[in-house]
Structures are given as C-alpha cells and as structure tokens.
Image 1 (tube, rainbow, N blue to C red):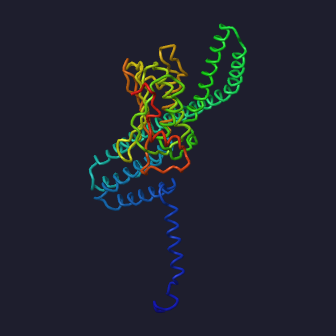
Image 2: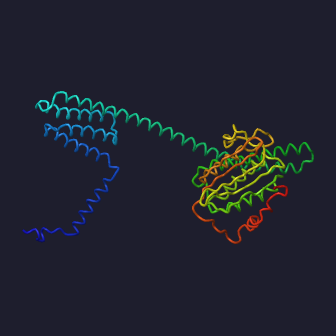
Image 3: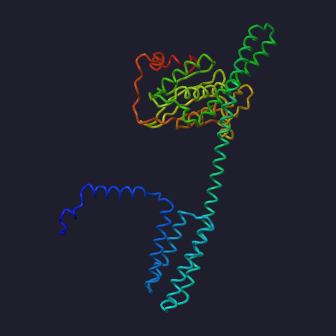
Length: 401
C-alpha cells in the first residue's frame, strides 16, 4: 500500500484534534506543576542517570552529581516530611554508592570515590536543615501576622461599635443640657451647665472622629469625585470666619482639581482650621493656601498660623490619638490631627507640620493629582465660591494684610 493511498492519509480534522489534545495536556501541566509531576519527573531523571552510572564506567561523575543536585533542587520545591525525606535520602545513597562501588570493583575508579556519597548526603542534610528553619520562621511570621490582623480588626470593630453606641445618648444628653441652660436664671448654675454642654459636645466630636478614624482602613471609606480645591478653600474660609475672631486670610490659590471624597476632605481641613483656632489668639493670622508646584504634581493644602507653635520634641507625637496641647484653654478632642492623617493617607497623600515655639505652625496636607486637567464645574454650582475666587478680598478680615 503506497504512502499516498487513502489509508495512509491523515485527515485534517484528526490532526487538528491531536494538536488540541497535546495543547490541552501542556496547559494542564503549566506552572506551578502538581507535586506528583515533580516527583515523577525526578524519579525518571534519576533513573536515567543511574543507568548511565552503571553503563558508562568512566563517566559516572556527571550523572552521579546530577542525581544529587536534582534531589536538592526538588526538595526546595517539595519539602517532604522528615520520614519520607530520610527514606529518599537512604535510597539515593544506596543506589549511587552501588554505582560507584561497581566502578571501584571493576578497577576503573579509586576507592576514595566512595567518600563523595556521604559528602553529598551531608550537603543535602544541611540544605534540609536550612529549609526547615526557613519554613518554621515563615510559619511563625504568618501566625504573628494573622494574630495582628485579628487584633487590628477587633480594635477597629470595637472603636466603631463604641463610637456608634455613644452617639445617640450623647446627642440626647446634649439636647437636654441645652434646654436646661435656657431655663436657668442663676449665673453659677448657667456656668455649670455650660461646662456640661461643652464636655458633651467634646464627647460627641470624639465619637464622630473615632468612627472616621476606625473606618479609614475600609475599602469603602472614600467616595471620590472631582473636587475643585481652590473653591473648597474659599468656602472653608467663609464658613470659619464668623466662628472665631482671627485674621483670616486666603494665600496662594492655584486652580486645581483632585479626585477626592469632598466630605472626608472637608472634615480633615475643618480639623486643621479648628486646631489653628485653638492655638492662636485674637490678633493672630490663619492663612489657607492651595498650591501645586508643577503641572500634574501633588496638590498641597497649607494651613498656616502665627500662634504659639509646637516644640520640636512634640512634633512627632501630635498625630497620635488623644494627644492634646499642654494648655488647658486649648484642649481639644485629641483626635483632630489623627483624623487629618487618616484621611490624607486614605487619599494616597500625607500631612506634615513645620513649627517652632512662638513662630506659629504650618500644616501641609498633600494630595496626589491624576494626570488630568481641571474639570469645569456646572454653571450653577457654587456661584458664591466663584465670586469669592474672583475677589479674594471679600474673604479676608479687615484687620488682615
């Protein structure tokens, strides 16, 4: 029957099916390979090298070392338990020693060649020892990491639950205290109730900020949208100006927009301005600036004041929770600056401080900006902010420079 006869022809469909089966088999064995595939491959490789040791009397060195090297490499991937490892080691020592011993018996190799078997076994045992130490260290590290993750999750959940449960009774108590204050006529009683109202309000702000800080690690913490930072700064100055008798100023305002959560970012900037108010007096300046050094670079929101300043040995502590000033008059919640840092880092930025005693403070909140030009806002949005940006003098206190 000729090779070109129909019986010897391979149909294209059969050939295509064979190629697909071969490809499917290769895909099934793609890396990382199943453990049994590695073991079977090593057994086959070692068997071929062992045959070469017995077959080629004067060339046993190469297959001998191939067997031991491949065993060491395989253990790096497999890491058998102690008992199977000892059995495999014993089998390899016995078979390789038999191959070398046969060559010694034939007279093709000196007796000293047998020393290589325990030497290679010692090298393999040393590698096993180091591998097991590494496994033990990785296991301990993983257990510590899991325990820390559980502790952090528990702590975060506790903060959220505690703050949530405290909000309602604090709000009710604050409402009753305000009603009581309006009905009292005595001066001393009124002062006492105002103290109660102040402390309840402080507790309310603590609970709200604890909720924000605890939720900062949540993937759903931010709901970003495009925010015009210069307009946000103008709006903040307008809201804060009636609350405190300070020399409020708008500094440099670069027209930039960032992708941020306006509510969270507003809370962070409110906390910075509140901190500036607490540490300044009537004639001190509080200046809010928005700057971008280069196109596409990070946006810096700077809150600067001419207040009392912060000693150098305390500047690394002010972003810790419940750290407050030494002055009782300026005592806050101790959570404002930690909230600022949590919000900044959730946005991919950070916050730093530059200050000195008697020289005022400058807090700089940095936000990354995506590579996008500023977006135009709808025509009817925040007309007052647009007017303020056109005439910044409207936002500056008459006593400011």
